[in-house]
Length: 194
Image (cartoon, rainbow, N blue to C red; front, top):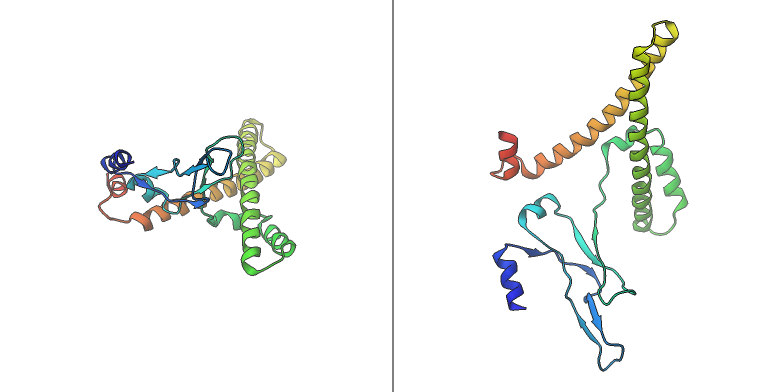
Protein backbone atom coordinates (compact mmCIF):
# COMPACT_ATOMS: atom_id res chain seq x y z
CA UNK A 1 0.00 0.00 0.00
CA UNK A 2 2.92 2.34 0.68
CA UNK A 3 4.15 1.89 -2.91
CA UNK A 4 0.68 2.81 -4.17
CA UNK A 5 0.66 5.96 -2.04
CA UNK A 6 4.13 6.87 -3.35
CA UNK A 7 2.95 6.49 -6.95
CA UNK A 8 -0.04 8.75 -6.22
CA UNK A 9 2.27 11.34 -4.65
CA UNK A 10 4.81 11.14 -7.51
CA UNK A 11 2.05 11.62 -10.09
CA UNK A 12 0.41 14.34 -7.99
CA UNK A 13 -2.87 12.43 -7.90
CA UNK A 14 -5.50 12.84 -5.20
CA UNK A 15 -8.21 10.45 -4.06
CA UNK A 16 -11.58 11.96 -5.03
CA UNK A 17 -13.36 10.39 -2.07
CA UNK A 18 -16.63 8.49 -2.19
CA UNK A 19 -20.13 7.99 -0.88
CA UNK A 20 -21.85 4.70 -0.24
CA UNK A 21 -20.42 1.48 1.15
CA UNK A 22 -16.87 1.87 2.48
CA UNK A 23 -15.54 -1.24 0.75
CA UNK A 24 -15.32 -1.91 -3.00
CA UNK A 25 -14.12 -5.53 -2.99
CA UNK A 26 -15.29 -8.63 -1.17
CA UNK A 27 -14.08 -12.24 -1.12
CA UNK A 28 -15.31 -15.27 0.78
CA UNK A 29 -18.78 -16.70 1.25
CA UNK A 30 -18.50 -17.62 4.91
CA UNK A 31 -18.35 -15.13 7.80
CA UNK A 32 -15.01 -16.50 9.02
CA UNK A 33 -13.37 -16.24 5.55
CA UNK A 34 -15.04 -13.03 4.39
CA UNK A 35 -12.61 -10.22 3.49
CA UNK A 36 -13.59 -6.65 2.60
CA UNK A 37 -11.25 -3.99 1.21
CA UNK A 38 -11.41 -0.64 -0.54
CA UNK A 39 -9.37 -1.55 -3.62
CA UNK A 40 -11.15 0.58 -6.21
CA UNK A 41 -11.00 4.35 -6.10
CA UNK A 42 -11.11 7.42 -8.28
CA UNK A 43 -7.99 9.56 -8.46
CA UNK A 44 -7.42 12.84 -10.24
CA UNK A 45 -4.99 15.72 -10.57
CA UNK A 46 -5.48 19.41 -9.76
CA UNK A 47 -6.19 20.36 -13.39
CA UNK A 48 -9.03 17.86 -13.64
CA UNK A 49 -10.45 18.89 -10.26
CA UNK A 50 -10.43 22.54 -11.31
CA UNK A 51 -12.63 21.59 -14.27
CA UNK A 52 -14.96 19.35 -12.25
CA UNK A 53 -14.78 20.51 -8.61
CA UNK A 54 -18.14 19.09 -7.50
CA UNK A 55 -17.60 15.54 -8.76
CA UNK A 56 -18.05 12.71 -6.31
CA UNK A 57 -17.77 8.96 -6.70
CA UNK A 58 -20.50 6.69 -5.45
CA UNK A 59 -19.84 3.04 -4.58
CA UNK A 60 -22.73 1.12 -6.12
CA UNK A 61 -24.09 -2.27 -4.96
CA UNK A 62 -22.51 -5.26 -6.70
CA UNK A 63 -24.03 -8.63 -7.50
CA UNK A 64 -22.18 -9.92 -10.57
CA UNK A 65 -18.58 -9.26 -9.52
CA UNK A 66 -16.52 -9.18 -6.36
CA UNK A 67 -15.80 -5.49 -7.13
CA UNK A 68 -18.47 -2.84 -6.84
CA UNK A 69 -19.01 -0.43 -9.74
CA UNK A 70 -18.01 3.20 -9.21
CA UNK A 71 -20.39 5.89 -10.42
CA UNK A 72 -19.22 9.44 -11.05
CA UNK A 73 -22.07 11.72 -10.02
CA UNK A 74 -22.84 14.96 -11.79
CA UNK A 75 -23.90 18.08 -9.96
CA UNK A 76 -27.23 19.59 -10.99
CA UNK A 77 -26.96 23.00 -12.65
CA UNK A 78 -29.82 25.12 -13.87
CA UNK A 79 -29.39 26.05 -17.53
CA UNK A 80 -30.30 29.58 -18.62
CA UNK A 81 -31.67 28.38 -21.97
CA UNK A 82 -34.33 26.24 -20.26
CA UNK A 83 -36.57 29.26 -19.63
CA UNK A 84 -36.59 29.94 -23.37
CA UNK A 85 -38.36 26.62 -23.99
CA UNK A 86 -42.13 26.79 -24.34
CA UNK A 87 -42.67 23.66 -22.26
CA UNK A 88 -40.45 24.75 -19.33
CA UNK A 89 -43.09 26.40 -17.10
CA UNK A 90 -45.57 23.59 -17.65
CA UNK A 91 -42.89 20.97 -16.92
CA UNK A 92 -41.91 22.65 -13.64
CA UNK A 93 -45.56 23.00 -12.63
CA UNK A 94 -46.32 19.33 -13.40
CA UNK A 95 -43.24 18.05 -11.60
CA UNK A 96 -43.91 20.19 -8.54
CA UNK A 97 -47.60 19.34 -8.29
CA UNK A 98 -47.08 15.61 -8.86
CA UNK A 99 -44.51 15.28 -6.06
CA UNK A 100 -45.22 15.01 -2.37
CA UNK A 101 -43.15 14.98 0.76
CA UNK A 102 -40.82 17.53 2.29
CA UNK A 103 -39.45 20.53 0.43
CA UNK A 104 -36.13 18.71 -0.11
CA UNK A 105 -37.89 15.65 -1.52
CA UNK A 106 -39.91 17.84 -3.88
CA UNK A 107 -36.74 19.65 -4.98
CA UNK A 108 -35.02 16.29 -5.65
CA UNK A 109 -37.96 15.15 -7.77
CA UNK A 110 -37.92 18.49 -9.61
CA UNK A 111 -34.16 18.21 -10.20
CA UNK A 112 -34.37 14.67 -11.63
CA UNK A 113 -37.42 15.54 -13.71
CA UNK A 114 -35.73 18.62 -15.17
CA UNK A 115 -32.64 16.54 -15.99
CA UNK A 116 -34.75 14.06 -17.98
CA UNK A 117 -36.76 16.86 -19.61
CA UNK A 118 -33.60 18.81 -20.53
CA UNK A 119 -31.85 15.83 -22.10
CA UNK A 120 -34.91 15.12 -24.25
CA UNK A 121 -35.31 18.80 -25.16
CA UNK A 122 -31.58 19.11 -25.94
CA UNK A 123 -31.83 16.15 -28.34
CA UNK A 124 -35.00 17.61 -29.91
CA UNK A 125 -33.34 21.03 -30.26
CA UNK A 126 -30.43 19.60 -32.23
CA UNK A 127 -32.82 17.77 -34.52
CA UNK A 128 -35.02 20.88 -34.87
CA UNK A 129 -32.02 23.08 -35.65
CA UNK A 130 -30.85 20.65 -38.36
CA UNK A 131 -34.37 20.52 -39.79
CA UNK A 132 -34.67 24.34 -39.82
CA UNK A 133 -31.24 24.70 -41.45
CA UNK A 134 -32.20 22.23 -44.20
CA UNK A 135 -35.57 23.97 -44.67
CA UNK A 136 -33.88 27.38 -44.88
CA UNK A 137 -31.43 26.08 -47.46
CA UNK A 138 -34.30 24.74 -49.58
CA UNK A 139 -36.33 27.95 -49.24
CA UNK A 140 -33.34 30.08 -50.23
CA UNK A 141 -33.02 28.03 -53.43
CA UNK A 142 -36.71 28.35 -54.37
CA UNK A 143 -38.18 31.11 -56.51
CA UNK A 144 -39.38 34.12 -54.52
CA UNK A 145 -43.06 34.88 -54.09
CA UNK A 146 -45.14 36.12 -51.14
CA UNK A 147 -45.59 32.64 -49.68
CA UNK A 148 -41.90 31.77 -50.06
CA UNK A 149 -40.81 35.06 -48.45
CA UNK A 150 -43.18 34.57 -45.50
CA UNK A 151 -41.90 31.01 -44.98
CA UNK A 152 -38.30 32.21 -45.34
CA UNK A 153 -38.76 34.92 -42.69
CA UNK A 154 -40.56 32.52 -40.33
CA UNK A 155 -37.84 29.89 -40.76
CA UNK A 156 -35.08 32.44 -40.08
CA UNK A 157 -36.85 33.65 -36.92
CA UNK A 158 -37.23 30.09 -35.62
CA UNK A 159 -33.62 29.18 -36.48
CA UNK A 160 -32.28 32.36 -34.87
CA UNK A 161 -34.24 31.54 -31.71
CA UNK A 162 -32.63 28.06 -31.60
CA UNK A 163 -29.21 29.64 -32.17
CA UNK A 164 -29.90 32.10 -29.34
CA UNK A 165 -30.56 29.15 -27.01
CA UNK A 166 -27.18 27.69 -28.02
CA UNK A 167 -25.55 31.05 -27.32
CA UNK A 168 -27.10 31.13 -23.84
CA UNK A 169 -25.77 27.62 -23.26
CA UNK A 170 -22.21 28.60 -24.22
CA UNK A 171 -22.33 32.02 -22.53
CA UNK A 172 -23.21 30.31 -19.26
CA UNK A 173 -20.21 28.01 -19.61
CA UNK A 174 -17.87 30.86 -20.54
CA UNK A 175 -19.08 32.88 -17.55
CA UNK A 176 -18.61 29.93 -15.20
CA UNK A 177 -15.04 29.48 -16.44
CA UNK A 178 -14.30 33.19 -16.14
CA UNK A 179 -15.71 33.37 -12.61
CA UNK A 180 -13.82 30.24 -11.66
CA UNK A 181 -10.46 31.16 -13.13
CA UNK A 182 -10.69 34.88 -13.97
CA UNK A 183 -7.32 36.42 -14.58
CA UNK A 184 -5.49 34.14 -12.18
CA UNK A 185 -2.16 32.82 -13.40
CA UNK A 186 -3.65 29.56 -14.64
CA UNK A 187 -3.59 27.55 -17.84
CA UNK A 188 -7.12 28.86 -18.44
CA UNK A 189 -5.89 32.47 -18.25
CA UNK A 190 -2.98 31.78 -20.59
CA UNK A 191 -5.30 30.12 -23.11
CA UNK A 192 -7.61 33.16 -23.00
CA UNK A 193 -4.83 35.74 -23.10
CA UNK A 194 -3.08 34.35 -26.19
